Image (cartoon, rainbow, N blue to C red; front, side, top):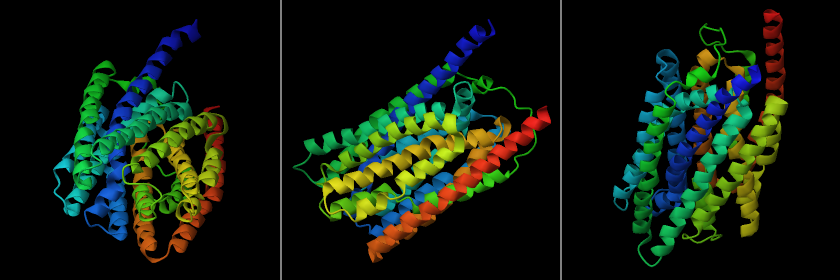
Length: 411
């Protein structure tokens, strides 16, 4: 009887995960559609590879560093929905605003991109925390993996929309065609906000999905959390932004401007499948799964930047997609496992701020290395990510010891 009484509650939690996944689907359709062309778009507007790497990294840094503040605010106020809605509005409507930027205005475009990342910073800790509440009923790995799968399905569709628009405008000015693409992406942006408001009305109190852990102390940096952030910082530093990959693809004529969005679309498809796979095995094997995902994804730069053919490039992009799938599913699930419910938004904020800082530094460095030496770009990218593997092993051991201490205290 007890199991039957819990089933409707679990089903409701699963429905919430699906609903937020659909919101993410249309959101990613918007900004990942834009990401599929933004590297070539900025290059066409006059930006260098170093500038693209700097701006890409700065956008990620802003998008992550502000999560420290927004995560703290979310924990203190418990206004999860308010932060999520406002953040989404800024995030998705920044994309169609790019359609208004004149040719040569790459600096203005870069400012808009940073504003878009600010919206992501505002919404992410609160949204991830709400999803983690529901995922506690279903399994943190599977819960975040399902959301990531739907998220990346939208990321797969977005570049296809851009591809279709570019096909229709292939005989016109390429910059104008890009501007039209950004404007068209305003349609899924509107749908995103409409669905988000519906979800807010249907599930006003998602925190009820997870029981109170009884831990009402201020957030403490446990050894497992510290090791985890160190390990993922190495991954963030070495993981190259996709705009630099698209720039390299165009520079070496592996694909035409019109078909370029298909490259990102393919990466997002791999991302979606990888998220489901790693999310499922995470619930079974735990944090050690990070070692496998990093081992598989780390060599992507060798294939992408040493590619002698399009097919080798595609293989490298597939490995890149595996790395992104792991980042967007089991990285969040790990935070949910390590940090208790009451402090989880702060945990997400601290983790993502550090992650974003090292992503920014790495993006700037790899962008500069691309202009200097592709060989050193590849060496740095691969080597730094491999350093993270033994650190993830130590993280897993530390988390196990901490759980044993907690269990002994409860007994």
